[in-house]
Length: 505
Ligand code: NAP
Image (cartoon, rainbow, N blue to C red; front, side, top):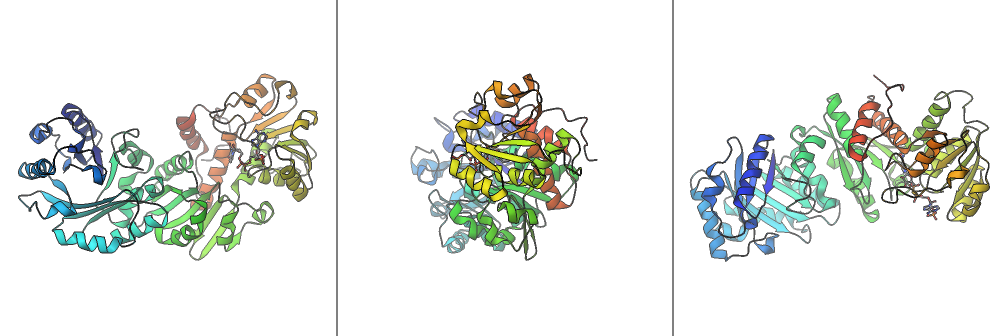
């Protein structure tokens, strides 16, 4: 179950949100009295309460992350009044729990908050809280490392008293999504994504529509993207939508894992139920030491963007490589044609980083003649040496004759949408222009290339192809490219119409 926290300064707004949430199907709300300014009337808040939603009354002090500015006596009085009114649950911090005895049908949540850390003695704290006659124990602590999530979730799973444990902050987000898998009676969400009442809290809509929280149970398989930062990732949107559409009991989480925490996270992954991971910055190279096997292409590229965890096996793949080559071959003829339509073509690759590497490897494997230009000549030279390509100074890029131009730099990416890595006059109608940047889909480079007109491949096409390949590695099922395309369109804006493409069934 999802409990939606409502915190508004006026009674009428609290009541309107409560009503709206009930209409949206929310089964439980938490009314945060500490957000109300002026005199709080519990009677008024509960007078026309919609049927079918359980209510938690909470009045949080400032030291516990709340906004209550009145006296402690007045706060305790309000909590007693809530019990007298017969609300379903009242939230009592451990230190006030003994002052407020059980009465009537109201259940007691004994809560603990720590906005600095997830204490080492989590289990002892939990045992202490169980001494205060709880129906439910609630712990909300700040996650400073991804390992905090596992400690919280396992503690919750092993507890005999129903426990809602969650880690705060964006590192803690997976603990909120996976709460149901680990036996929590509910998890908390916020009414609107711009009004979270605790760090890292997701909106009710996001929990329901993206994560399909109500369907997550003990057997749900876990997948996710491991990155730092991770908030911008489109992957949770597209993978979760596919799981839902294909009826797969799985959830895809955003795992924010700082570089120093990767080793511990990979140890924890099986205990979290993780079966597969998308891997991105800054882990694409470091993840290699945790793998038992790699796809042959990964050995040459030396970067992994997909890990499949199958029992003791951890197998690494690079779907960026296949996706980029499939996009090019699709635009020029046939995917997988022998010889490849790329063979013998002169290609200028801009950038020498994480995406350029699989692109250059794939191009050279298909017999293309590759020149690399990037900001740091040394980095271009290193990449060129690895795959028998040529490197030139960034300033010399406009003097390179090419049939195909591929942008593997972030130039043109949101918010710098009015930048292009080459001048418009460099673009010739005979060229194929491939921009790997996918936000926005129509970068300035793509717009100018279309106006010449050049054949173009967008970063969205590559992104969706790599996600589709990844989905197959995770589930052995074909994802729908058009569905993924719709999700990307919904999330970042309009994309090319692929209705005539070779869409899998
Ligand atoms: P990266 O590892 O940081 O590499 C970026 C490369 O671009 C580096 O060589 C960098 O040069 C160069 N560069 C950056 N700014 C530049 C500038 N102003 N002028 C000249 N060169 C510049 O990043 P990445 O992982 O390769 O990602 C690059 C882009 O690919 C991202 O912006 C992303 O939009 C896109 N991407 C697309 C997909 C997809 O599926 N479509 C997947 C992943 C990434 P230095 O060496 O000097 O830093």
